[in-house]
Image (cartoon, rainbow over all chains, first blue to last red; front, side, top):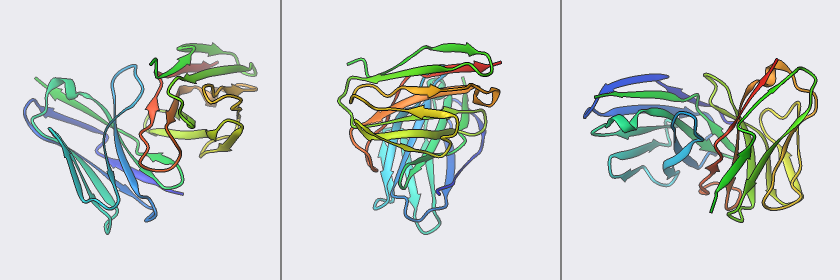
Length: 109
Length: 114
């Protein structure tokens, strides 16, 4: 089955800086790669996703890039704000959804 | 819409006890699933359902049962709880199975098995 690895496990940045989280996947048949944000005490919420036929997607301060050849994808957050502090999960869909272990992002004011 | 609701929010069980975690959605979604979240391991799929009357196993199904008698409800049953089942459980739903369908998660149930 699919195996998704995510790093770093923790990331601390100053407000206004950029944050990058990287994931790799093992199954070349995976074709959908969502990113979720989980705030304390809540369920994960989709923030951006990308399909396998697209190399990059942006939504305001958030962007995701996908390299199918290398089987890795990344989340980029620019101009970080304290409210971006949360745990972020990447995932890959083949026959079902497989998640990375998560990255705890802290944005220091 | 209430979205995906889960009850209870917290539960403490003794080893060997049974219980049912409730999950309901009001979005008329066909696909529903259960995940467990453990520190450092992300979310792992327990069971899923592609529609009423249809269920299947995910990555970590042992010790759990599910049924899907209606589109709205997807309960998760622990028949004989074990300390290894201490975790946070999330129910999720999406419009259909397959990729490109956003999954909506409930708020979670924190379960402790003593």
